[in-house]
Amino acid sequence: MSKFILTRRGLIKSGAAVGAGLALPTIFTSRASAFTNEPTGSTVKFGFNVPQTGPYAEEGLDELRAQELAVQHLNGEGDGGMLQTFSSKVLKGDGLLGKKVEFVTGDTQTKSDAARAAAKSMIEKDGVVMINGGSSSGVAVAVQGLCQEAGIIFMAGLTHSNDTTGK
View (cartoon, rainbow, N blue to C red):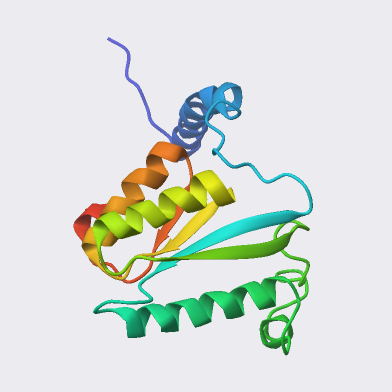
């Protein structure tokens, strides 16, 4: 019987080979799984789905102000605060990948059905590539599922549910 000696170099080579093998199928299917609203033209649109009315309206309006400020900084507008804070290599003020960032908003009312309807409108009517928001777990779970079905990026705002954090 032969003895197998595992070296650190052999382990690294094996790990690299396995990783490359697992990544290979993504090369051939990347276009098939591209998100629904791939941006074309000179703009890209984000959706901010926050409670503007209802029990969490105060938090939602704070979220919305922060999101609007982020868009200003991405586009190089405003006082340039973030542009002055970060290196020019990180944030250039030319939007996202050279496309000007625009946004639309939806009022979740802190209700799952209203949040889902607003998100659906943003995806289908407005052509957003990303939705951000969700000040309650129920709202976030409802919108997360819709975004996954549509192939749209979803970033939950203030939820603590295991269903949105990956358990």
